[in-house]
Amino acid sequence: MSGGVESLCRTDCSRFRRSKLQSICGKKVHATILNAIPDPSPSQYSSLKVRYFMSTFSMFRRPATIALSLTASIAIVACNPTPAPTATVTNVAVSASPSTIAINATTTAKAVVTGTNSPAQTVTWTSSVPTVASVSGAGLVTGLKEGTTVITAKSTVDTSKSGSVTITVKAPASTTPVVTGVVLTLTPATAPVGGTATAKGVVSGTNQSQNVTFSSSNEAIAMVDDNGKITAKAVGTATIKVTSVDDTSKFDADTFTVTPATTLTTAKINFQTATAATPAGYTPNTGAAYVATSGIGWVTEATAGTATPTPLNLTNNARNRVPDGTNVIAGQDARLYTQIQMQCGTPTTGAPCTDPAVLTSGAFEYRVVNGKYNVTVSVGDADKRNLNSLHSINVEGAVAIAPFTPTLTSQFKSNTVAVTVTDGSLTIDAKNGKNTKLNYVDIVPAP
Image (cartoon, rainbow, N blue to C red; front, side, top):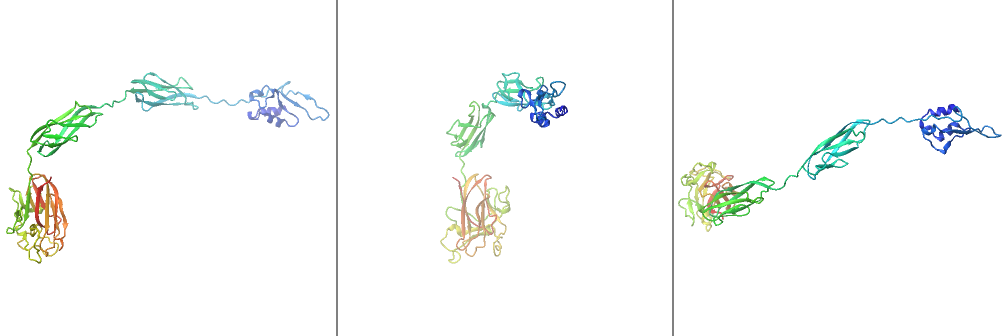
């Protein structure tokens, strides 16, 4: 029996339970724990006594106390568990991002505790200058005033171990506009009476807007609206001023000059033979080559619109259709009975013009005052037998008549196009056409 208990004591602590003792002792020994402790701890086993009753005699029973060790009791050896290893702290690393904050702004400081046996990550936080920035128990740093402070995290496992980070607190960035200058540009700085120009102001500085106001020193000469559009009213000069809205002490100004009104060119030209009657209100053009001094005449299509166009005499390409009641119908617009064939060498069908016609494609140049014009052109042939054309007209590079094929019921086509002349010469060409025939052109200033 004593050996059994000793053997039990040598086993793991989990076996020191009342049920285990009873199982090992069997029927003959009923073990009870003195002090009525149902499940004593291992340390309590060392002072417990075991009482058992012999039950092998059927005639009588009597209690007997057996000394299991030495005399009246046995100290059951306590089974002590292996103690947990002690954690140690070797370092506390602290970081904060950002480490520079504005007043009333926040940042979060983080601490990482390293060491042996997985030390706890719990720390206590402090600020060296709490009036500059405070820190909460969770590491939340709040900026209070300009300056620097050191935020420290101290390990709760080993208070001799700590880490820190420096926090800088700055005043919030100013949002107040500061204007350092304004620059005015006039485009152009001169315009004729009735003309317009544009004023533009650029504001420099910090936090500034580009909002400006415009003004004129003499609105009788030049007016300027809120968007900077200048209208020339009378001959003279006026000072245009631009002022920053953010800082009205910052402005710029420049002189705007108004010149006498420019009279744009007006011309009506009928293309015809020298002997044909000229329609009322028109000037005849019979195909004479370009003359540089006048800036008027015919040039090769290849050099049209250039600074030095090549003159081309197209008088042999001028035509005058006389009504015959069959092929040329009487009663039409007088301007439609005459023409100059701009592309006599390129019919859509059949043979080109016969000698002495000029087969080189030509274009028309006409000197005008620079400005905006509405230009009307007409193409076609009054003779119903001559439908082998693909008429095309461009004015200053803008399409006036897209390639047009005439028919018996639609021999002519006219159109008006708005153009701007900047080189002093209005150019009319027939590029993209074949055997184009030009009847007349009206050049009038645009409204």
